[in-house]
Every structure is written in structure tokens, then in C-alpha cells.
Amino acid sequence: MIKIDPRRIWLWLTAHIDSLLLSFMLMLMLIGLIVLYSATGQDLGKTTGQMLNMLVALVAMWAVANVSPQHIARAALPVYGLGLLLLIGVALFGDVSHGARRWLNIGIRIQPSEMMKLAVPLMLAWYLDRREKTLNLKDFGVAVLLLVAPVGLIVKQPDLGTALLISASGFYALFLAGLSWRIILGLVGVGAASAPILWSLMHDYQRQRILTLIDPSQDPLGAGYHIIQSSIALGSGGIFGKGWFNGTQTHLDFLPERTTDFIFAVYGEEFGLAGNLILLAVYILVIGRGLVIAAKAPTLFSRLLAGSITLTFFTYAFVNMGMVSGILPVVGVPLPLISYGGTSMVTLLVGFGMLMSIQTHRKLVQS
Image (tube, rainbow, N blue to C red; front, side, top):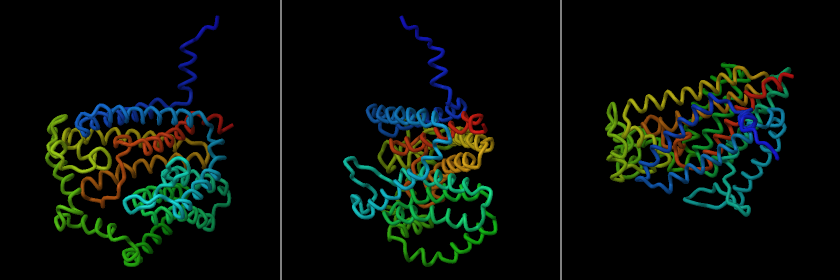
């Protein structure tokens, strides 16, 4: 008779899981389920669906965490190459929905831009690590081209939110690899100087988002509606909020996209400033733990990958809260681990799986 040792099974299951990082992530996911249940009008089916999304994402995270950083590095080039080919496929044969060409039907309907959120930092970390001893300006130039290629294809779809996140992940990899501040400031200067050209290349709806950010009241029932309603919801929450299920902007259907992009407004209205501070504290704990893992990583590849993933997670949260608060344009970025959705949840947790792999395989990497 075979004896099952629960302790050994538990140790096997948790051997490559960072308990601190997982604890902070689960706190955010629990908050997400609580606010989603209210945002959906106490729809148990949709909340259960999100729990299933979380379960799938956690399994994916566990699987990636058990893969060593060396094997993750070997996957960088094929994953990036496949993602680029799929983006080209989207540009040529992609399905058009709501005026955007973002999906590709290959038997199943996929959105390749989501894949690039991890493929780009993975590729840049691998490339820069291979040139660590002789890293020079030319190498950074090649890395920029590796970043610009997918971002350009995603901007063309158009998908400004995803392009922003991928650009940020690539920038973080370049910065952490030692890109000079003078070059960074020079690029910022070039970007500012080219603003009129970029403005002329923007789609009408993208220009309208920027104009609406400056003055939402110019179109209160159209382009400015989202920002006005989310600002009312956040402001009306006060110090301690109106209480769970008691958000008037939410439950009287004034607040749009309340389960996805604007779920932070639902949370702020019902739990107030105190709740927002708690949420920010948990986000800071997740980001802090990720940066600690990056700082302790033994190789340049691991440091760049861990740092890029962590800082991109920060960008997710910052951009979403900024657009809901009215200090950034509305670009369609979900609140990480809170907003409803399976694809973004899996993408985020696969990234965290890479962080856990880097942390728990440190001794193996050093040897």
C-alpha cells in the first residue's frame, strides 16, 4: 500500500513559491473579488467566473515558477519571434472589432499583444545579458529596435494602452541595464520636439482623449463622461466611503466600465480614502517585494527581467488610477489583480511566476 505524505506533497507544491509575494498578491485578488461582487450588482456568476480566472492564472504562475531562469532565458528568442509573427498576422489578417484590429483567429481567437507584455522584457533581458561584458551604445540601439518593432505594430492596431505598457517594460529593461541619463533626457527632448508630428499621426479618438483630459466638461455626455463620472464617484466616497453595495454612481448605472477599467472608482466610492490607502499599501508591498527579488538576483538577465516585470506592474496600477482620477488620459489599462478579466490576470501571474523562479532558483543560478 502506497503511503501519501501530505507534508512532502506540500513542500513539493510550495518549493518554488515565494510566500511573501504570494500573500500580498492574494490580498489584492481578495479585494478584487469583494469590489467586483458589488460592481456587478451582486452577480455571483460573474464573480465565480473571476475566481476561475484566478485559479487558472495561479496554476500558470506555479508552472512557470518551477521552471529555472536558465530555461526561461532560452525561451526568450522563440517566444519573441512567435509574438512578432502573430502581430504581423494581426496587421494582415486580424479580426476588426469596434474599429480596431487586435485579434487573430487561428482556430482559437487570440490577442498577440498580450503575449508581448512578457515577451518584450524577456527578449531585452536575454539580449542585454548576452552582451553584458561589452555593452555599448550600439547594443542599446539594437535593443531599442527590438522594442520599437512590436510597439509600432500594436500602435497601428490601434491599442494605445497595451503599447504604453510594453514601451514601459522595454524602457525599464534599458534603464536597469545602465542606459545613460543623458541619453534618456535626450530622447525625452526629441519626443517633446516631435509632439506636433505625433499629434498629426494620432487617430481622432486619441486626440479627443487628450483634449478631454484638459477639460472634460467640453463634452460631458460624450468623451468627458467617463472621467466626470469616475471623479464624482471617487470624491463622493469621502474618508470612509458609502459602504459595500451602497455606491450610488455604481448602482444607479452612472459609472461606465465599472468591472474593468473603472473598477477603482467603484472601490473608492464604497470604501473611501481609507480604503484607497489600504489598497495602495498592498500595491506598495507587492512592488517592494518584486524590487527586493530583482536586487538580489545573481545575473543580469534575472535582474533585468525581475525589475522590468515589477516596474511594469507599477505602471499598470499608476496609469489605471491616474486615468480614473482624471490626471491621465483614458487608455484602457485594467487595475492589476482587481479588474475583471482572464487574459490580463494570466499575463500578470505568469510574470509573477518568473519573479518567483528567479527568487527560489537563486542558488542554482549562481552555481
